[in-house]
Image 1 (cartoon, rainbow, N blue to C red):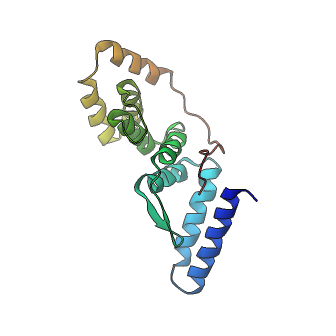
Image 2: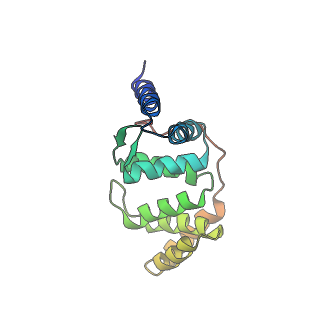
Length: 165
């Protein structure tokens, strides 16, 4: 059995024990299992949720899911590429700030903010306008071209390399 399948099975056992002893509501265990399954099947909301869990670190199924910024960004990207506005905004923030293994890229940041802004995400509208003030006209034109050419992907069962929840 591969490592990710073992850890997934292990988490199922932990959830069953916690539920059995009444230490975890059944709904919580089922919700986490649904998030994992749906994310692996390409559902953007679940991919975004897993991105948040990896970005902030979460206590789930009796274990601490440690912060893993690289995996979080991969989950955010999968959701953002499908047009998930909050994931697009989060990806824009990561590019705008750099750090945690990402290079600062104002063109990419503007693109993701602009895509989220098209869906009326108020934070993205402010962020897009703010980052534009630090960009050259050529960078803005390049970013706007990326926005114009962008097409959402369909839900993908492709998942981040490692670790799978």
